[in-house]
Image (cartoon, rainbow over all chains, first blue to last red; front, side, top):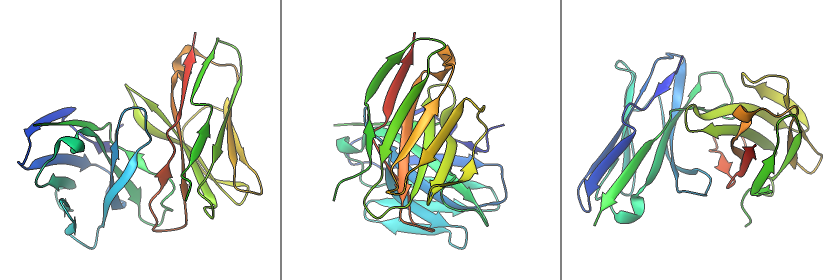
Length: 114
Length: 112
């Protein structure tokens, strides 16, 4: 049973527009969430995280929103750039757990067209 | 500062063989985690080591094992390889709690 779901396997947006990547989770014990970006032939790179005590965290062009009641989070990239084209993974950690056991979604391939 | 280093980058084995993968964490990082990435299952947690002790373990059979050395370097071993073990194996290291994990570029294992 998948506890972290990224229902869109792919997303295509135009350069300069907003990219919105979605993630749903089922385990109510999750209280810390992270987004990773992965280019082909490279390992995932940490992007941004959010704790369950917050509903928004912003870092430059990247903003993550968390809706705990809906068990939903999203990553907004504004403005999108061609270099943002990659696979984006949502990951979660349960409360009381270490941050070493990440549960990942299956990823969304983002393509930003020039 | 050097990142997480995994060796080898690519490996081809046949069914029934065993394999050992190596991971050198970022200097100063004492926690090392291993993940398996496959197209069907995505990224799945294998196990995590801290100070030479396995602290967390995912839902993988006993054929998958690992260890960590006193210098924090870690190895992962898979015995009696099966076709389904073909995957990208990723290692990640972390400085401590509430710190994100930093990943290596992985070892691509192909089983023939």
